[in-house]
Length: 150
Image (cartoon, rainbow, N blue to C red; front, side, top):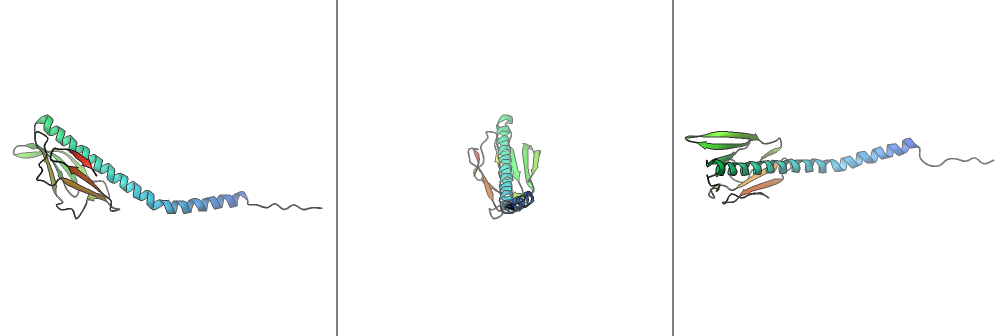
């Protein structure tokens, strides 16, 4: 009489191995995902700032008023000239983990667009934003008013 013994793994053993492999994969991929999320947030913030700069330039031309974007450590103000003071049009705070990059000069940047939409070239024309991971995005304003992200 022959006795057959089954060889192989039980379903529980296979599921346990798959669970361990999944856990190890998440530990390896975790820091990469966090870094990508921080970079996406930095890029999104840079795009929002760029769009608001473009809107300020467009509004300056459309309303024939001087507009200024005042960039600070906590966020930025969009201002409209109303002699003898400035009206605050909007204030946008930086999202958590985003700030002006240190080591790039003045931390109080004023970007002024004249009634013709021209940017004063004598001012600081670059804004450096950074996230907690150390990544930096530059927003550059050309004298003619072109605004781009690098």
